[in-house]
Length: 576
Image (tube, rainbow, N blue to C red; front, side, top):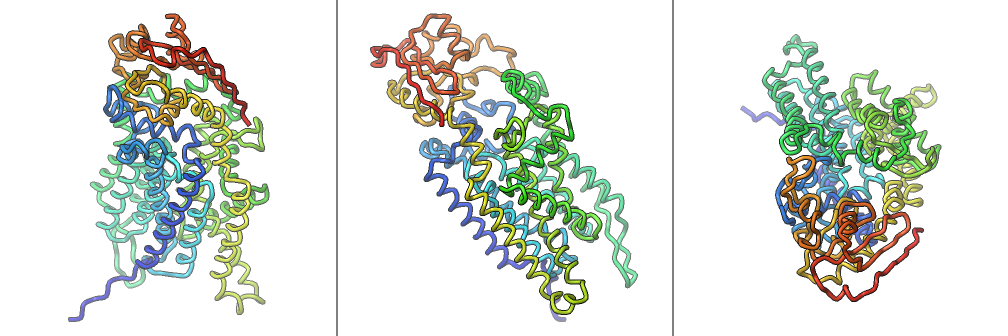
């Protein structure tokens, strides 16, 4: 008896190898470029992510409680092994590694998703093959994603989990074998679990996919072989329950963590460090607050700015994506990929009612803020724009004069059209600098200038001195100076479950008597350390003034160092 041939795969191993190496090359080359130009730490949040991870093992009170509450923990836990090295911590390169890995897996996921969503039962066809490469190209060549994956920001990491969750859901929805469908659903659940521990977007995605899984299962029937067609099998109820458990586990764990540690399960949403509290404290303008339609418009505009620089390019991308979505929605293949639009309602709700403003440079208040959120629609653009272009090309070939001569070239024409669009739009973005890069450069300039000046003074302090400092805004100064965080008494050095303060905590005790606990106190105008030093009349050794930032002051504590002999210094640096 001859051995049976294995069923044909929807992709070849050589294609995967080539794609992975291409993605690795793009990732590493772009990282080295931005690293050389010192742009890896432009985002203040990137600096914060790295130092939250660092505090897990480098702190006066090390441990998992140093992960805090507002940001979800998985990105920080993935960063930890790569910043044990002091050099990789200071340079920010250690924080980039998980993001770079996420980029590579995201590119591969886009390729796999299109094959899974529009392929024909595992068989290779022209539409799926061209579409997979086109989608991987649109995603992996995006200048804004290329910059973000070179930093410690979590966008590329979350997108990888998001994409692979949809990949496995698509395979589950189209799988005829019960066991394989169940395995795909479990893998989808694991990706959702990771996504829910990376960004809150994942929580909304989990709800959408759970509802989708219930709907898909209810429409399946037992396999019936009648010689004409083959119907899909229902996955086991056990597999569905396992999927729901995995989807709900991460949010439940985070709520339980907040309840146990902070005595408030919603501490991340309404606590003193939440987006809501920051909005109230800083009186940040939100042009779309309370208006769901306006919020959705701002998010879509941010998404357009991430794929095009000129207005006509932005509108063309959106129009083609909507056309491709209609093609997928009314067709048999590709319908599952519509899940890639899930970020749109989530961010519309977040901007309108969740204290998460988005500023775009072309609309009031004509600024750059949270534009990187628009990258969450990049997977949707990457799938549906090539699909829209392919539909236009195929429709054109149906004209009598073109049908005979051009129908066989339709896939080639579609791929060339995608390449032209990508080269035109992405080329314009590179010439103007990616909007995510500009957002970071504009918003971080004043803070970076202050951190740089402060780091210079901190380096001059004795290497065995203890510092008292609120790390919320300017932990980057310590990172630049290479000062271990275990030398710094900060707001994380107390028992978080003692709310609102911990009378016996190191942080609270040091604020009551700074000179007894710290050699130097570094305060920023109005922060807890500055108020404590002023109330106890500590001597100001250095004052640093930078445009757009609160003044920073180094106060004398218990150490009589060489800086004590210096007269107070007032430095001014104008922002460009």
